[in-house]
Amino acid sequence: MDIAIRRKRNALIVSLDGELDLATAAEVKERVDAALAANAKVNHLIWDLEKVGFIDSSGLAVLLGRYKEIQARSGKVIALRALEPVRRVLTMAGMERIMQFADTEEQALAQIGGKR
Image (cartoon, rainbow, N blue to C red; front, side):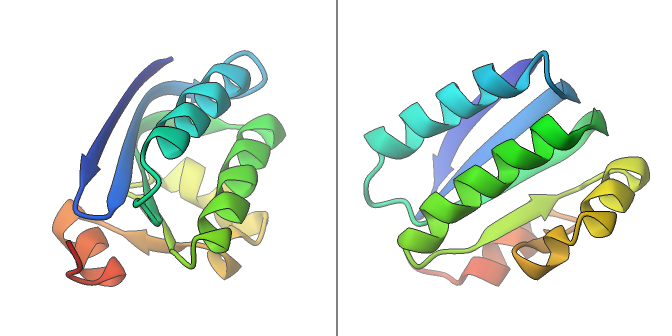
């Protein structure tokens, strides 16, 4: 799993490349938690899932756990560019109740607002 994390405005954008499953979930969790801890002013999280072809319950748990942190910061979580198989799993798991979906980074940033 390749993980790239960058800050844009008041959001962290986490780009994942690979499968988000039992084998990779712990590393993703640790890296994102460290980035959130280092960026106290960040209150939104954008998961760029364009290169994620598979997600299992461990991956869903990672998304849910980070949602709780972002919720405590009064922010939003957005799934960006989720491929159809991954989006289907997210939808079946009810994740659309806690996160929004976006097709472009600009759309995702617009959904969180223009705060800097």
